[in-house]
Length: 355
Image 1: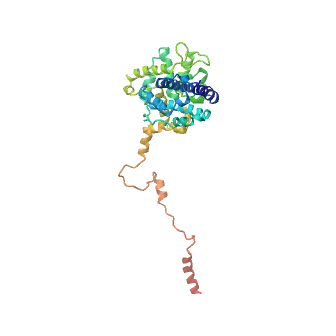
Image 2: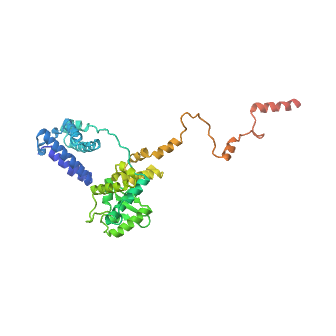
Image 3: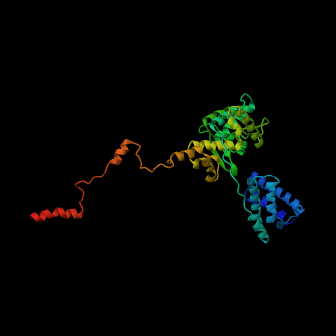
C-alpha cells in the first residue's frame, strides 16, 4: 500500500475514534467526504484509491474536487466548506506523520472556505403556531403522536436529532417538569416544560406505554422516527394548517424552523441572550445572536427610543411633577457658610476704625 491508504485508515481509527472520540455522525460525515474525494480522484487520474500517494492529493486536485461538488453535484457553499474542513483535518494529521510532504499538504491547508450569503431566520408567528399545532387529527394514534411532537419541538427548541434520540426515561413530568436532552457534541442539558406541554406529554406517554429506553415519538413498529419521516409529517400538517392560516403557504417550513420559532418566542419575551444560548444548546453565544438580528420587535423598540430625523435637540423633561420640583431647587448660600477671605477683611475694617 502507498502512504495515503495507511495514513487515511489511521486518521479514522487513531485520530477520530480513539483520540478525539468523535461522534458516529462526525465519523460518518468524514467518511462520506473521502468516499466522494477518492471517487473523484480515481476518475481524474485513473488510479485506484489504494494506489494513491499523498502527493496525488495536491491543491489543484482538491480545488477541482470542490468545484465538482458545487457545479456537478450542486452542493451549497456551506456543504462545500464542510467537506473542505474534513480534508483540512486529515491534512493536519498527515503533516505530522509525513513531513516530507509538508509543502504539498500546506498548499491544501491554505485553500480557504468560501463565503456565502446567510438566509434570514424563518420562524412562525403566534397564529401560524396555533394553526400548525391544531392540524393533526387527534382522533387517530398518529395524529396524537404528531400533535405531541410538534408542541414539544416548538416549546423546547430541540434539534430534530434530539427529538429522535428522546427516550421515555428522559421525560420528567413531576415537580419541576423537564426533559433531559442528549445534544450535539455529546453535550447534555435539561429543558423545562410549559404546563400545556406537560399535559399533552402526560396523556401521550400514558397511551404510549413504552419502556424507559423506548423512543418518545415512535413509528407504528416502535422504532424511532427518522429525520425524513419528521420532515414529511411536518410538510403534511403544514399543508393542512395553510388552509386555516394562508401565510404558512409562503414559508419554507422545516424542523429547524420550529427550533427558530422557540428561540424567537424567548426573544419576544425579553429573555436574556445568555439564557437562550444554553437553552438551545449553543456552544458559543455568538451563534445565538442571529435571533437578535431577526427580531423586528427588538429593532422597533430601538427606533422608538430615538428622536425623529430633523427634530431639534431638547433638554430632558422630568416624567413627574415632584421630580420637576426637586430639579427646580437651587442651592442658596446661608449666613453660616464661610465667607471668602476678601469679604472677611472688609468686615473687619469697621471694627478697627471704631477702635
